[in-house]
Amino acid sequence: MKKILLSTTFILISCLAFSQGITWEPTIQGAFAKAKAQNKPVFVECFHPNCPICMSLEPTLKNAEVGKFYNQNFINYKLNLSDAKQVKFLNDKKIYLPGFPLFLYFDKNQNILHHTDPVNTPKDFVNHAKAALDPNTQSGTAWKRYQAGSRDIGMLSGLAYLLRITQDTTRNIKVANDLYGVYPKDKLSSQESWEIAKKCLMDVDNGFAEFWLRNLATARKYEEAKGHAGTETNAMGMLVQMAIYSPKASKYSLAKVNKLKQYMNLIGAGQYVTSNTWQIEAQALIREQGPDKALAFIQNQVSQTSQPQMLVYYVTFYNVNFPDGKLATQVRNWLNTAIPQLKTPLDIANGRYESARLYKKAGDAAKAKQELALAKTSLASAKAKATDANSKKVVENLGNSINQLAI
Image (cartoon, rainbow, N blue to C red; front, side, top):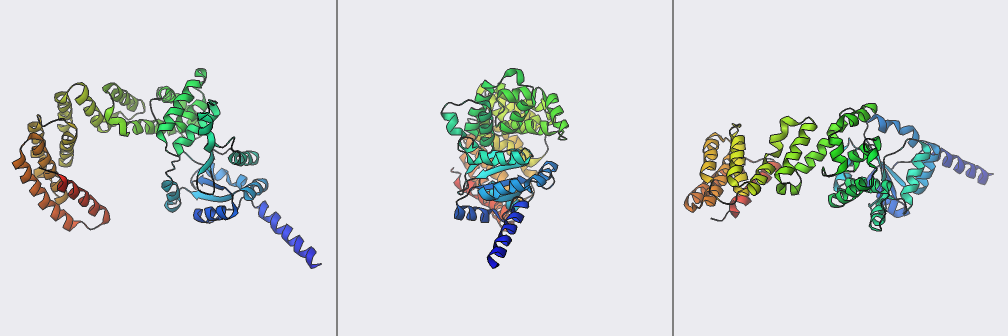
């Protein structure tokens, strides 16, 4: 009788567990520890508590069949994107989420096996999980299929999406360009095409990006239909911003810079064009039209500011980017205006340091040494006043630069 009672109790507990849907681990560290112990992959639901779509998934996550499949095959964790401590896991793994909700599946060693935007039905949730378990359908193995020659649109879009999530810019650009190459051009205005542009791209020099930057009104209709008006501008704006602040931006041609300026106007950011592009435009001018043209361009920016720190920054730009000190006299005028207005010891130290660099660039070693001595005096004062870790680090970095300036 006891055996029958115990068996009945066990069956009842098991049924209750499955009827409650997916079982979640309290910490992601614990989830991966359990995954290693049980030799299972880990399912991570990335959600935000203020996201209506995320909240709409809850009944499906509590579905009995969904719970049964996930609890049998995965260790599960809910990652709250409003909690900085939980988001730290993504940051440490250099994972970027273009949107949410997003399902991520990892192996026990924290490597991404698969990712998907969830389709909110019990059947689809199970199918997402099955795809994550199958090496032939995992997005994490798509790069191997790509290298083997596959150019299936679904595979390419999934791979480009994953490469953006993992911030693999080089591979992403290659795959996204191939995706555009095989994509039917008569479907460029489709919602599928828009979703690709929004989620899969890391570079503005792509056919999808160029199409949608000029057809934002159509994208806006798609986003408005989902209650996300404005997402289209944010998505394309991020692409343009990535291009402007890319490590390769310093080598852009004037034609490329002008194209980016046009794109900024298209996304309604025309008032921010100069503040975001003047540096890469000046660098292009130095290469293509000469230092005189570049300095005249910067002088126009200088005439529109009264901020002494910004004037010092223009001098920094000259010291770093111009080939010699032939135009240093004109640049010296910017410092003559800025330095008397600087208030804090740190700003003064930085101004004197740039002044020393400018004299060195112009070939006046004696005056450069004088300015460097003044920079060190102000830096000592700045160091004495630095109280928090951030200000101490700034002072330390400037001190390193001052000490390394050989005259």
